[in-house]
Length: 439
Image (cartoon, rainbow, N blue to C red; front, top):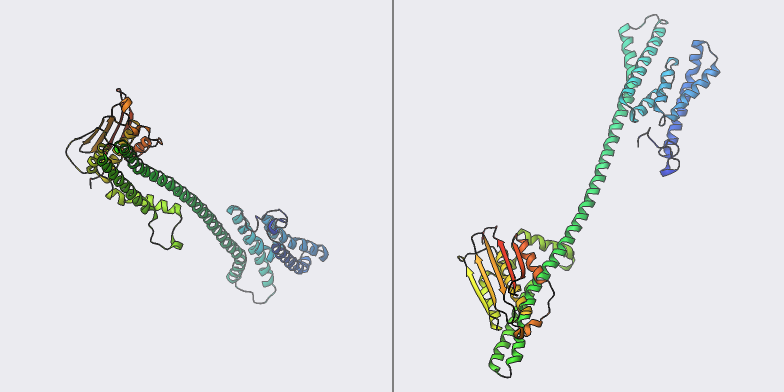
């Protein structure tokens, strides 16, 4: 707040009436006392010149000089009083301090220019008349040009100097206020950025949880479903054919080892951090780093994960459980990007798992179509034989398989369709574009 714009609230933040601080009261009172003394000292000379009693002139001088105490509240009134005291050659301090306060205050520039011009002209005129009177009393008066130079110099300097100082202080205060506003704005922006960073971390945490849950479902549901089917088959054939039961038991062990290997791989990605414990980031930031790393470059599991070439083995595992699976391939063999091939593999894996769960013993068709810019896959099963549904038909389901497949396919810009067929079976179909250059 500038000198003239101080509020009139008493006691708030040390403010008293229109003064912003208590020390401002002391300063203005001291200036008013000095100004009143100056005017009183000039009062006898003016009273003798105009032929008036000294007492009333001294009282008027005290009142005029004391107006300086109101400079922060009414700076224009202070300057007008200074203009009125010019003919009496009083109020030099009133002129200087009044003009400074007027320039610093939020007063229009036209008003400042007008009052400055009035004081300059009036001061020069009064001083010139005083010089003429003084020159008439001496034997060798000064040259006229020199007298005019003295008058103009003194009359302009004592008016322009406080105006220039006030303009400098006013510009500096505005600069400080603008810098303070800019700092406040930057602080608000930093706070918004911090909030957005927290939101991004929360979003990354949710996305990573969803991805981990989807991967865990793909690995665990398929492997464990096959293990359950094989264990049921072992129970059924163990009394009749111990050798076949032993082979099925070996398959169950192999599937269990594969499931554990994939689980360790996924958990290792989350746990790997070579930094000391004190330097490790917050788990939310760790999830954000993992998500950004997945966006910036292919992840390790994308490069070494399942590919289309592994579909034959995947189908073979289902055949070993006794499921009748027909695997058909169309189109020329070609390589697609790792996310595309991995998604196709997971779709077939989850679809076969659903057949094991809900349609055990049903004939299933797996069709893979390789095209130039996309890959399509179809997994369709017939209705299961009523009395031959097998032990896999009673497997529990969490209801997340189809949702996970749809999320994987749509994340790559593909289309996903699933639903029952006219014959009573179920169909899962996906078409995934290969929009990036194949690896």
